Amino acid sequence: MLTVADLLTAALQSVKELMPWDLAEKMKERPELLILDVREPHEFAAMHIPGSLHVPRGVLEAACEWDFDDTCPELVRAREGEIVVVCRSGHRSVFAAEVMQRMGYSRVQSLKTGLRGWNDYEEPLVDGNGQPVEGDEADSFFLSRVRDDQKKPKD
Image 1 (tube, one colour):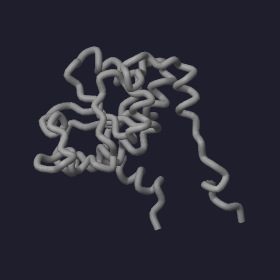
Image 2 (cartoon, rainbow, N blue to C red; image 1 turned 180 degrees about the vertical axis):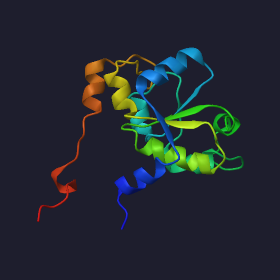
Image 3 (cartoon, rainbow, N blue to C red; image 1 turned 90 degrees about the vertical axis):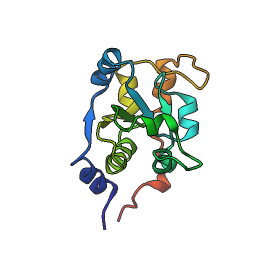
């Protein structure tokens, strides 16, 4: 049986990652860079990188192609462009980038450490209304909330 860690290790064989400071620099150098946030709608509404495109992971494959209810024209048109996929911790974004590569997106990368690392590097986040999110609020939002019943039982 494969674990999430096994799947992530396998995906990282083909997916390139970049650190938050590298993404911040790329954004300055290349304003056309597409930042794709694959988190859930409530996560994106709470806070995201300014100017990022939101496509939840659950509809990503359909969003990447024409003729689906979930088609995202901006994303389909970006197939040949440079894309950095982001999520909370950098795991969902790796899986999303792997799928996108299989679908012909050749210049897609994942943000290592996710938005938690982006926030730790003190880069800007905005809420659903485009208003800046304070660092303390973001710190609290990105804390792990694994409940006891979600933890592996001790033998």
